[in-house]
Image (cartoon, rainbow, N blue to C red; front, side, top):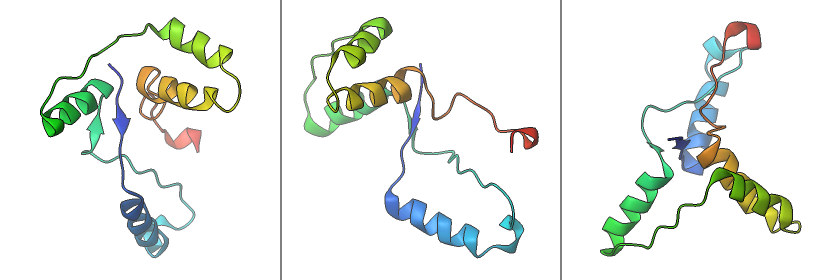
Length: 103
């Protein structure tokens, strides 16, 4: 199960201002990986069901079918499918570690 990090733009703006005014961050790469607001796609669906008070129909689509869909759809219709695949299936937001040597 892959996860995604969800942030409000306002929170990112506040964090950015704090980093730019902190001398400890000078000439450094700063990455924000919050310990909260991390959820899987199934978490999001479950929370939405709780919010609306009903169960949504869930259709599980294999990874390969989503890739084929992204390849078959014309631009720009393929963009949301590719983003969903990148974030929720491949886990591109969280599936890597940053090491000092990578900077």
